[in-house]
Image 1 (spheres, rainbow, N blue to C red):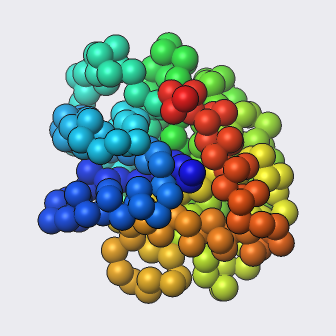
Image 2 (cartoon, rainbow, N blue to C red):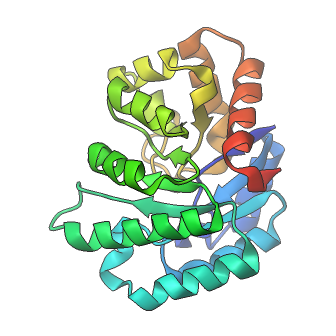
Length: 254
């Protein structure tokens, strides 16, 4: 069984055929899908999605690209939702220094506050770290949360090792399937296998074998095949290890 540790199955891109997408993923051997939140307004729909489809597990959080419409009351609501629904993680949270005209201070405020919530409820976090790995690491060293997953990891080996030291697994998905992603593929091939988890980030980050089409959790087995090929090991070994890694860091999956 495979675990997709990061898939936005609640996204509008799946509104027309979500039942079919979930069924195809399950038929392909994806037994668990972690569905991260991005803003308070979407929490109810996310939770309904996870209730509807077997194997779907919620995470709740405010994404750094959505903080422009967040309010401090949303943090109170997040705490209330955690008490009621006990998600597998707090996420998707973090920093994004790639988007144009980003508000660093606002992003850092909501990231810091959500790390406090994660520590308060003893939950791991799903991290968004685009162009912000070192700053995220700085916050993690101060917050001392219960580990989690550095989603869509694309940093350096040194940064990877720092996340691992802090108790984090590294998420690898569609970006790893591109031949031109040489540094990322080298990391996927050589980092300790017990530090890696698989993800799609569907409907985003489509793998090379589907071009620019909408990504979907059903493609996770082929992403796993890429990791097996890069490491020169069997697919069964990749599936067993990454599934164990996901369960080890996201206790709510068990």
